[in-house]
Length: 156
Image (tube, rainbow, N blue to C red; front, side):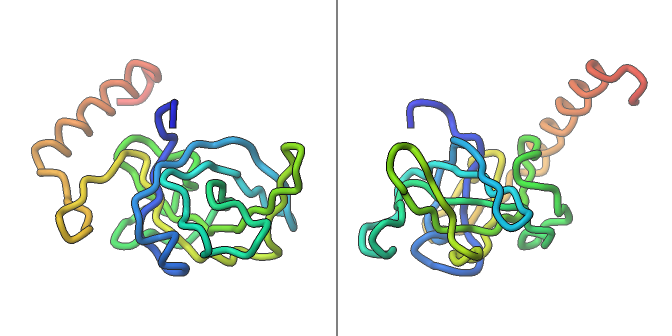
């Protein structure tokens, strides 16, 4: 990926080949489908060959808002509106390549549900997300509050 990731996909319920690997995601577009907006994202690393049927992209998936809370987190904020350090949940869709730069999504979110992290999570040797030390979280929160108060002087 030549540009920094917009967010990261890791862990969830559904297709283990998709949700059990930390993947950097970058938005490339959106499609309207059944009254929902499905955001198309490139994923790196791409999903291993042979997991999907022919015609389904292994380097592009669709994501839509999922109101469920991510595992162990209090927020159900949409994944495309996350601040650094926040986590959300998204429904994952297969994306079909129609050629000529045109994409379509599956009839329903067939890949499952995944946690979306705005910042790249640190993983331990067993693939578990390591929590940031309390002092680091406190410092990041203080910086975010200071930045928010500069952009919105009425907020204190």
